[in-house]
Amino acid sequence: MDERTENIRLMDSTANPAPLGLCGFGMTTLLLNLHNVGLFGMDSMIMAMGIFFGGLAQAVAGKMEWRKNNLFGTVAFSSYGLFWIILIALQMLPKLGLGEAPTPISMGWFLTLWGIFSIGLWIATFDMNKMTQVLFATVALLFFLLAAADFTGNETIKLIGGIDGVICGSLALYIALATVINTTRGKEILPIR
Image (cartoon, rainbow, N blue to C red; front, side, top):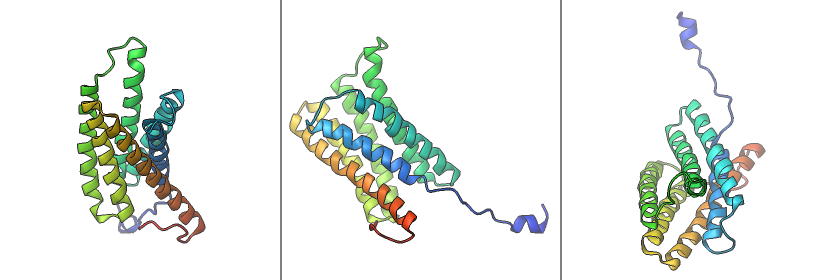
């Protein structure tokens, strides 16, 4: 390379993929936890949202974050996108005769591992804005509450987890929409601190 070529820096003109991933996470988390608080049953609407918006949209956002060299966004969106796909597969595979349904104990451990993973991501948010820190704290708490509900069979713990999940999903959706609105308007309309 000549000296002129070495001094050229490419400008990143691609859109911020985080709102897409946060919308996929937030809306799907909201729906599942509205189910957990008892507003409606587990049906194909939740499963379709889980596969396509919670799963696929977040995986796409993770890939886009990778292109932007954002390690946190890549790991968070790709992992949680795959979580949703796995969660729906755990529901559907037994119905298709492809394995036994997970037991409450095995689901408890599955959710516990996701809670531990989420604590790691929460620690990574300590240099980010407070809303993102609170979001990942509620994500970790959600996994641990739902794991405890599976381990114990306690419906009150599941209800508390559902309430936390509604808060968590709402916060993710707020951050996503505030980012889109603020970016589109070119000024802070909705605060993200």
